[in-house]
Image (cartoon, rainbow, N blue to C red; front, side):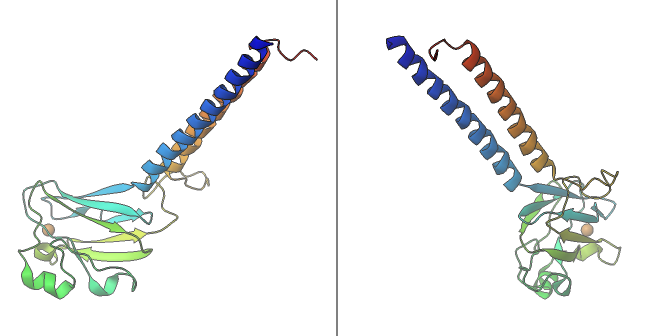
Length: 195
Ligand SMILES: [Cu+2]
């Protein structure tokens, strides 16, 4: 009798711990999904690379100057969604202010500028010193954004963001192992329920 109750208690403890494992791995996956980041290079070839990118709302885009020539990241004021916040390296609140102040707002080689995008839509932006050389680009913020950006999975399968896929796999693996462990626990864990 004494032994029966302790077995029952440990079984409950086991299931509780197992549920906790699922919850915490799910939370870890979500945290990763929310911390989405996307890097766009600025190079000595005077381009944004890639010059077209699609990201999910909430993504922080990091423009990295991977060369030695200075660049700016400056939004075209009339090419961003109405509700969107204006963005420009140097923190200017209008395109004209950014143009007037340059080279203030310059992102030197090895440095970066980042901005987090919440509002869906398309954003046109450019580099002030190299606009005439064609250093312009477009960013699309869309809830349909896949983890891999352009191109892709093909096969008619809807693109699933990588983070969602990871969450799914982690959750599935946790559930399978819990079911397997619970099965063995119940089967070999003790003969305390012999009705
Ligand atoms: Cu440039």
